[in-house]
Length: 258
Length: 258
Image 1 (tube, rainbow over the protein chains, first blue to last red):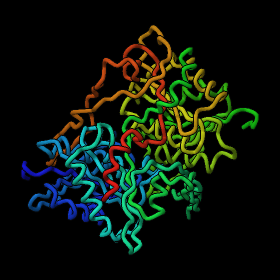
Image 2: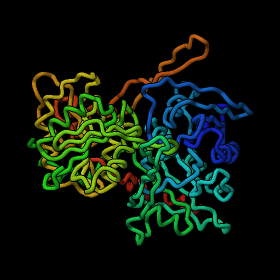
Image 3: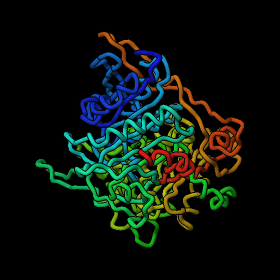
Image 4: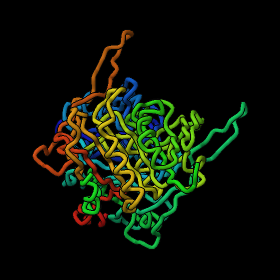
């Protein structure tokens, strides 16, 4: 590692073996030294979960010039905490997460381990960016994302991000025609429904798989991430660590008489 | 279950056996019918995690007049999804989570499975409230919380909450003198540090436990949940499902030229 180059901390929730993470290493290694601390297998849907009842372990799985790759037994957020305290002699210049195999726009941000990494980096005062591609295929084509990923990371390395604000970047599934550009978006109001698939166990009783259908509740609004993705744009949604619903505070003042 | 009474869906992240949940059942059963769907053991730090790679199961563990208690193999958010699709013929009138054994104020909201329940309820369009007591003791004294829990749930049953807004209610550790009242707060800016405790495994290598110290980054501000708790008030923080950092959008417009 070279102290004169930026230090880029990478993680994800699909696991250290995922194509999206390994493509991200290749995209970003020209920009700085790379430290990867990623889960040792898939942790989809981990959100900001932390491991409180079990011990954590990690191991170095690859070292190349300017690149060190570690695999961790914990969640995506655990990975960031471990990397920052155990593997970096200095604060990373940026935390980058992904590229996720699957959509993390709209309310999916709340379930996303990819965005867990990003929120954790942001809470530690490091500019942090999550990248997700709307394609669950393990062999998804990430090539159209390259100029956007590099451009966004370069910009953030140069000018930073406001304190307490991180980025949720989602790419449409490649259509073969490239993307129409980048849009700064708000997250769409949406809802998941029909989320349980019930099956009969051969020895009796039912078990359930999480599944479901997502509905954009405001498809006519052109300023949302869901709209941008549906229309071929790269959706960049700034996300806040401070989740206070400020606009609701006055209307709750009657609770203070309790 | 009686359709004329409100239906109250309860869950938590400490597990179905936790004292905080069982006290909550007792506090709220005078207000309506109670359906509990809670994890079958502790799931602290689950955030909004969902179970994507394993099947889910649940079983009914207790039935009393107006009260049904189920234990689920999944995360707190899984519990809400299962309850809403499999156990309620009608939409619950309110989702209540807790009472958590431990503080979920400030940035802890992001890691909290208690608040995962609440965000999930809110995303499903149901008024949702999380209660947490700043005392990790398994036998913590919840009695000072009773009038506040009942008062807040009654108020929310009566007048609802704004769409996309839920409540994060934190109680100071009981001092023996009761609470000074309720304060509507914003979440404090704070940070965890020194989060890893390293130990040597007897057969070689290191393992790590998550731990840490929380620092309030704005102790002088009197409008935060951390301040309220430190000064003997019940802290009520409205939390938004829409985590867009609206104030940062204009400053990112240069990314649209990519």
